[in-house]
Length: 364
Image 1 (cartoon, one colour):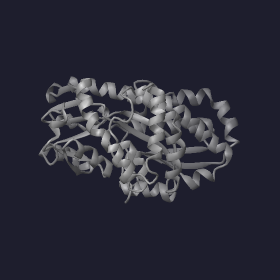
Image 2 (tube, rainbow, N blue to C red):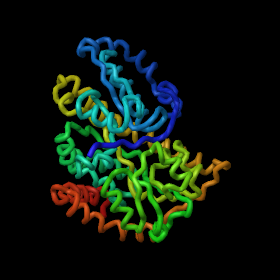
Image 3 (cartoon, rainbow, N blue to C red):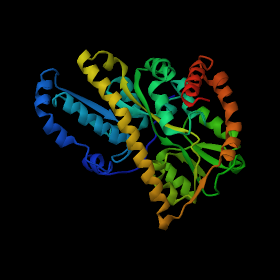
Image 4 (spheres, rainbow, N blue to C red):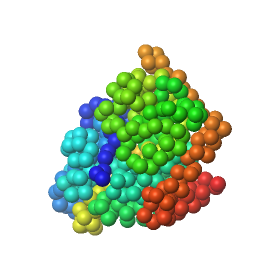
């Protein structure tokens, strides 16, 4: 099964997207000027190279802004010798084209959503499990940063398919949009939920009593508008930028899952790099973890405000109580066993280790 990507919505052009959407100057020009002397010295340490960095999103969105900031930092650290070109989704073909390009080495780097690579890396389907990660976003990011289950064990599974995840990071909590309003599992009865091509995602919504339908992101807005599907899940910034609240009456702040992204490279390409180049990549990826957490937090907070203040498209906001959440948790938990017995190739060993690591962070 081919990998597939999820696209978010539109934004501006490269330069405006990098600076204007962040709410602050990214420091690209200033940083280059201040570091010009160091940059000139660094240039002698690196051979001229050009790297392509594909994303699932458009300028102004979290993933694209991540790639743009990453490119700026690599440029500065290598004295301009290494040029990284971010590509918005579709810039190098379809979802399948982009995924295959990374695996085949036609592109060097990509932001990829592990929850949507389950056709090849079945262990990665664990990201489709509801209520796995804590509701606290900072705790979730800490787990993604430090988890051996993810950064060692799951990474090895991806590398079998020529994909090396260098880092995992959250783009924010997932939430539901619908017309009927979702506050209890019974609200999913007779409900046609849009999902991606993930067997475990189908199982998760079947557990609530929903029907599921795989639908491309490009068809989703129209599908919601015409009633082909009754609802969907995504982070707030995605919901706002894609305009899903324009064709759905309610937004449920469910935080039932996290939209996890990972910074990936082609395995053979990365392993063949000189040590100094590889060190620059690793250093930049590590320091970008805090940057992207702040970026997604800002974008999601601003998106919620924008939806609340959109008087032309009034949206009812539903917040789940702890009792409401527990009703969903009780139905979601058996899906974990389905993952262990029917999906995992290692009897759920990676999930088991990850759950232990989550418990250590949350104290539960």
